[in-house]
Each structure stands twice: as C-alpha cells, then as structure tokens.
Image (cartoon, rainbow, N blue to C red):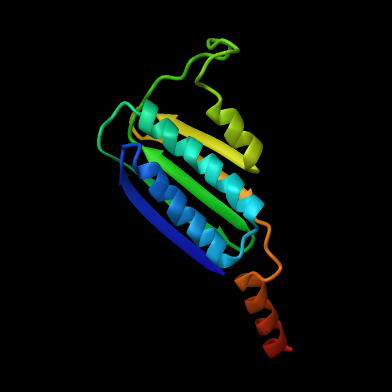
Length: 148
C-alpha cells in the first residue's frame, strides 16, 4: 500500500490545525494506532510551528507525506533561511528551542536540510503501529487468502 499527499499552506498559525487534521485523519483512516498518530501529529505540529515562527520569508510552505508499508514519511518545507543559534546559545530555561528535541523523541528519524538557496526541509520518519482492526491488516489478510 502506498498513500501520498501534498499541502501548500500559508505561513500562518491557522494552517497548523489544517495539517493536523489532514495527517491525523489519513493515519486514523488507515488504522494506525492512536499513540502512533499522536506522536506523528505532535512532531509535525512542532515542525510547522517552526516554519510559522522562524522562516524568514512570507508566503507559503509545503507539507508532503507518504505512507509506504509500515512507515510514514513527512517533509515540511519552507523557503526561508533563518540562522540557527549555536549549541548552548540558548539558556536551559529558554521558552524556545525545544521543538527539535521533542521531534527527535517522537519519531524514528529526523533530518533537517537547510541552505540559503533552497530553504529548510524537516524530514520526519516514523515506523507505524496498527490497530488490530486496521484497514491495511484486513486488506493484507484478504490478499493472502486470495493468493494462497
């Protein structure tokens, strides 16, 4: 099974719930477990929040997603080129700067690609866990029976 989607959104706070709705409904519709959906949604929200708060460009940003086999891969892209503070530049009680740590804790792979000419892309990858009654599992069982 392969599912893909792509969103182009205004760089505004109101876009973040839209991303959460689309991603959450897609994963729940496939039968991904609630805990796994929650992890993906929090990590995605953090990445989108970073775009809205820190991208140095106006306009839109993109969120692309793919579910392939048992993996969800998301890319959150903007065309800004905000500088990153050096490690240790923020204080321990700083109100910002925790998003990357949160994303790392919730997904299996996190990669941030940033360059002045291409902008910034946050890549999130999460192995999915499924509810017992998941659509994907029912389809796999039917295909196994018909092939056997």
